Image (cartoon, rainbow, N blue to C red):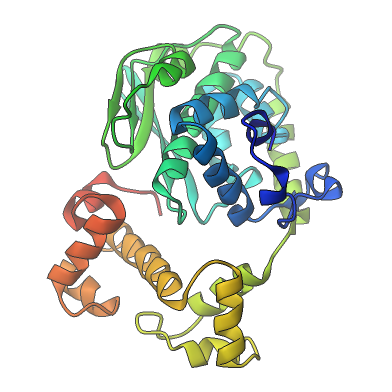
Length: 327
C-alpha cells in the first residue's frame, strides 16, 4: 500500500478490498487474502515499470515491517539458519499455497529460490518475484550489519528494456532473465558467518512465537476465496461442472455466474487456474508421464497439455519438472 501510494495509484482502486481496514492492517494475526495484495501489485505496475515497483516495495519494507518473520532471519546464530527459519514460516507473511521459499546449499554457494504460483498478470508477477529476492537480500544484510552482494540474481521474467532499478536493488549487474524460477545466490561463507547480535536461545523463542501467531491467525476470506475453495474441493477437479460448484455453495448457477462477473473473472478462467495448479503439482510431486497427467487434468492429449504449460509458464512440462519445487 505504501508503494502504491507513492506511485500515485488512486486508493479507490484497492481501499475497499478485504483486509485493508486499519483494524486488519494493524493486527498481525489478520491474514489478508492474496488476491488483495495481487490487485495492489497489478495497479502499481500500471503506474510504473515492474523493475521500479520491486525496488520501491523493498524500500518500503524496513526491518520489523513483516513482524516476527523479519526477526527470524536477523536474530538467528547465522544468516543461513535465519533464512531457513524464514522458509519454514513463510505462511507468516505470504499465502503458503502460492509462495514458496527454498534454500539450497551447494559447496561454496547458497541459492535462495522464490516460487510464485499466483494467478498474476505478467508485470505484477515480475515485480513480486524481483521484490521477494530483494527482501531476502535486505534481511540477510541486516542480520550481518553489512550489505551482502550476491554472486548472481536469476529472474523468472523477460528482459526489461531498462533494469537500472534492479541493479540498485541488488547491488550487482550479474542479473539474468528468462529462468523458470527466480533465485539469488550468495557465498556460503557469508551466510555462515556469525550474526553479530545473536543471542543464545532467541531463535527458539521466535519460532515458538511464529507458531503461536499462525495458530491464532484470522484468515480473511471473501466470496471469490470461498468459490475457489468450493471449486478445488470437487472430487472430479479435472472436469468440474458449474452446477456442482453452485450446489456446493447453495446458490443458483445464474447467481454464481453473476458473482464471478462482479469479481472480474469467469468460469473458464477459474477452471484453467485450477488445472494449472493441479498440473504443476503433478509435475513436481509425482513421476507420472505427460500423457497420464494430461488425462488426469482434463486435456485431450499430451500435446494440448504442452500448449497449456507453454502459455502459462513459457516453457515445456519437462523443463518445469526439472526446475523442481519442494512438496
